[in-house]
Length: 361
Ligand code: HEC
Ligand code: HEC
Image 1 (cartoon, rainbow, N blue to C red):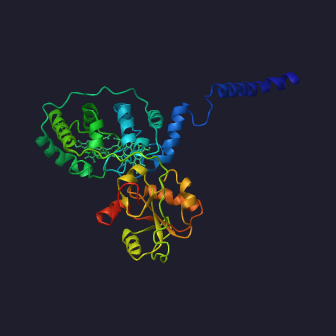
Image 2 (spheres, protein in one colour):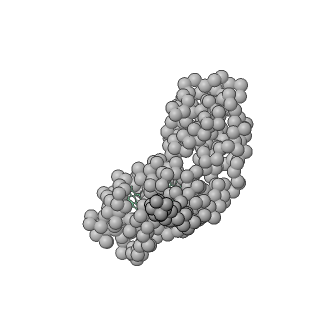
Image 3 (cartoon, rainbow, N blue to C red):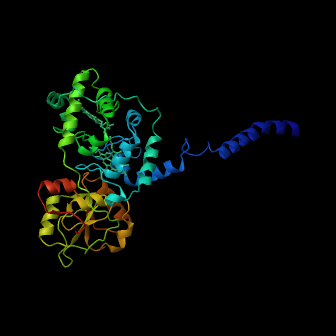
């Protein structure tokens, strides 16, 4: 009798032993594959600062125009340097901020490398062999015809004003190799809107398009580098019009308030604060006149300085992903008069409403 019950216990004991061994060797951690400490740090930073636009797993398009960063082909074709430069220097003329501390952003070079390591952890394939020949026989004039016909609908007439990634942008082109661009055009990015042109375009036509892209790169203006000053930036006097009346027509987030209403209430002398939710590098570049910099990823240090009894209008230009996150964090911290500027800075600028640059509100 005791012998029999012992034997029936054996499988249980064995299972417990296996589990113990697995735990000791680390393969039983939740989440499956094991992360290095660097990848873990990269994941934390990505969740805090990047997922708002690129999505929680870097799949892209949580906000307008932010491409996938974890697509298998992209990762197999892209070099670390391309990723690092994009992260640290940003992409001028787009909502992709310069995140480097040299540009008054929050990230060190090590932080950027940690994010790259995290993104790399999504890549299952070895680096692709790219066709790196320079497009010597390519003709920019012929390329322009192909581009207008095949590419402009998605990437814009000059490669920067379309609904998707700005392939005509100076910062993208100076970092992208011919092999990288050629691969994207020929093979596309399966699973995204980017089609393969391997059948639609002859090799010569692809080189024509490459020649066109390189001509845009040459004629692009030099990037303006704002002075380095580490955040948190000083907030300046708050609110605007401290003695003014309560603004009319503002609605608490998750509702947003139209730019025309905010502008009219500012002109009427209403009491409010304008909070720029983007990375400080963007704020220094250009912000709404009177706004202060309160980055969405780390607003806590500013809470004590923000007025509880005045409306806080959050904005960004993506057009409302970062401002939406900031607004949520303000509500959680106990602020109640919180709204988001509908359509954000882009529409404010399109209406030629006043803006400033530099550190002054
Ligand atoms: C139907 C829409 C569409 C068309 C047409 C299109 N693209 Fe794209 N393209 C995209 C999208 C979307 C992406 C980003 C894919 C992603 O998120 O991974 C992309 C990415 C790219 C990239 C890679 C950029 C990067 O940063 O990774 C290049 C280069 C490119 N396109 C060039 C072209 C060229 C040249 C043409 C015309 C011959 C063209 N595309 C036509 C939608 C399009
Ligand atoms: C406000 C939205 C937004 C946030 C936040 C953001 N990005 Fe971007 N990112 C973009 C957009 C838009 C682009 C495409 C820019 C272009 O057209 O060249 C981009 C491009 C990139 C690229 C180049 C991709 C390519 O295919 O060329 C990388 C790498 C990148 N982002 C990484 C990051 C990382 C890492 C963070 C966080 C530290 C981050 N981004 C935060 C919007 C954002």
